[in-house]
Length: 402
Image (tube, rainbow, N blue to C red; front, top):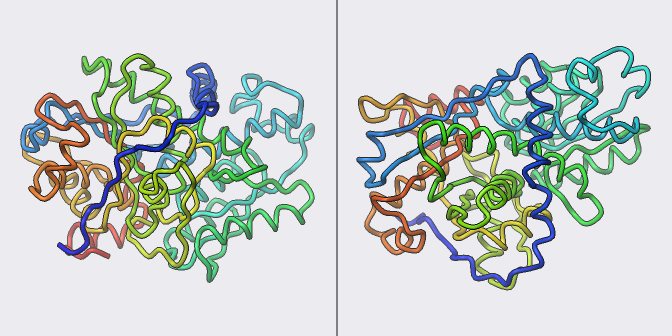
């Protein structure tokens, strides 16, 4: 295949690792307690694929299935909701622990805090999460979507009462539009999971919100009798989720951390390109970044995450669309005896990449670089279900790649 999986082993110089504390276990516990206060909260499944592990030549495979999160079919709401709560807590001089769901949604708090307009850019899942949370918290949301976003994802956001538009620019330009609009709006706030110089507090809160998912997975692994995974495969757009997951596991297992592998869409692989440079400098990808992995089509890294990732990640991978599509199909139609998982394009990228590495001889060197073998216990995150049902059917049922 001409469009090969590419990889870079992390040889970047280490920094003072000052951002790792963002994902300290007590910070993640605060986010988890906040999410548990929602009536919609339940722990999403961690599915063990025993037959698949045997087929791929691994000891164990676990997939964290975020298609069940708050009825929104994706994990992103964890970040946006917690960041909004932290912002409202700060503005009202409270600790976030004083603002569980029933207080946050109360008329009394609305009178005390007033109304803010939360601006964001999204390919779909993050914007839907922000819109959903704003709607529950009686706040306003304005969402900018990049060129190529689907009508299904636009309508899902509008259904939550947000103002949403598809723009003629890429994701990173939409982020700039959201920031500029927020600046001109009274009580306008940007809720974005990408950080840049001068905008790092809210993205750090979003990452802590994502930590709920990693913490649940850690507890669920223990319930399966797995004391720690040997490997974690996690996808990245701007890198906030990857930084959150890497940060959580580095803090949870400081003396024996799992090998973390970050998987990006090849047309938007800013972290892989940064790792390939080897200097520790950020790399930026621009242009349209057309990929089925819409949630990963981001070309500028989150500065907080980048610092965590370059200190701790083992290997960065740029993966083509065919690997994500393969992952979707394998999870939807697994080996008899294993449960099926509905995993969308961005959700299936890590698993599809893992399956390719374990079954295709051209990736033998990559398999060895990661240290994957019959003793490996691998945790993958499926971050979304069929968030675009038509595209999902086209890929899984019709055998297309778009």
